[in-house]
Image (cartoon, rainbow, N blue to C red; front, side):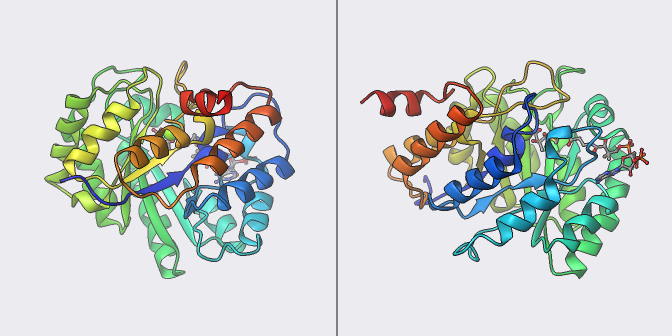
Amino acid sequence: HLPTDVRIVEVGPRDGLQNEKQPVSTDIKVELIERLARTGLRTIEATAFVSPKWVPQMADSADVLTRSLALPGTSHIQFPVLAPNLKGLEAALSHGVREVAVFGAASESFSHKNINCSIDESLARFEPVAKAALQAGVRVRGYISCVLGCPYEGEVSPQAVAKVARKLADMGCYEISLGDTIGMGTPLATQKMLQAVAAEIPIESMAGHYHDTYSMALPNILASLEMGVRVFDASIGGLGGCPYAAGASGNVATEDVVWMMHGMGIKTGINLEQLVDTSRWINRQIGREPASKVSRALLAR
Ligand code: HMG
Ligand code: MG
C-alpha cells in the first residue's frame, strides 16, 4: 500500500547552509532558491529568523525571505522559515512570510543546547507564536528534534516524541516534522517511533526529517512510507549539519529521495536532472563535492 505520490520539503537553503562555516552570500542563497524553485519543488524552506549570535549564517534572513517571495512565477511555492519566538515571528511577518516553523525537541539536553530552554518552556514559548501566526493567516509547521536519539542523552523514548507531537498539533501545527537530528535511527526503530506518534496525531500530518549521518535515511524513509508517511524533508546535495549536534551530517540528499521515489513509481513532481544540476552548482559555489551518490553517478554518465 505505497502511496502514488509524495511531497518533498527542500530544506537545503536553511538546514543545508546554517552550519556552513564560510560565509555564503545572500545572492548565492537566493540563486539556490530560484534554481530549486525551477525543479518542481513546491516547498522550499528559505531561511531561519533566529538569533544571528547563535547562527551567524542565517543573519540575512530578512533579505533572503523578501527576495525569495519576489521571485517571479513562484506564487504556488511555499517558502517557510524557522521562527523560534515572537521576535522571529514578528520579523518574518513584517517581510511577508506565509509559513513559519517552530522547532522543539524530544530531549531536554538538546532543547537547552539548541534553543536555550527546557521542552516545557519551549512549548510555552511556541504557543503565542503559533497563535499570532495563525491569526495573521500564516501556516505553522512544527519540528521535533532527536526523535530517534540525542547527541547528549543517547536513546529517546517514542513516548517522549509522541507527547511533544500532540502539543504541537494542539497549537495548530498543520504538520509535524520528525527530526532524526544525528541520523541514529534504523528502520524498525523508526517504525516504532512513528507508531507511538500515530497514537496521538494522524499519519497524514507527519513528515520524516532524516539526517544521513549513518546512511540510514533512505531505509528509514522506506520504512516510513510503509507506515503511510507521505512527506519527507531533504536537502539538495545532502548539504548540512546541525550546529548543536557535533558530527551530524546533512539531511538525506533531495536527489537521492527523488531517485528512489521515481524508481518505485511514486511521483514527486520534481525534475531529477535539474535537481542534479542544482546540486552540482551549489556544491561548486561552496567548494564541496556532492555528498549524494545519485548526483555523483548521474554526473559521471
Ligand atoms: P536566548 O539567548 O535564550 O534568547 O536564545 P534571548 O531572548 O535571551 O535573546 C538573546 C539575544 O538574541 C537578544 O539580543 C535578542 O534580541 C536576540 P541582544 O539583546 O543580546 O543583542 N534574539 C533574536 N535575534 C534575532 N531573531 C530572533 C531572536 N531571538 C532573540 N528570533 C534563541 C534563544 C531561541 C533566540 C536562540 O537560542 C536561537 O536563536 N537558537 C536557534 C538555534 C538554531 O537555529 N538551531 C538550528 C535550527 S534547528 C535544527 O537544525 C533542527 C531541525 O533541522 C530538525 C532536526 O534535524 O532535528 C529543525
Ligand atoms: Mg535538521
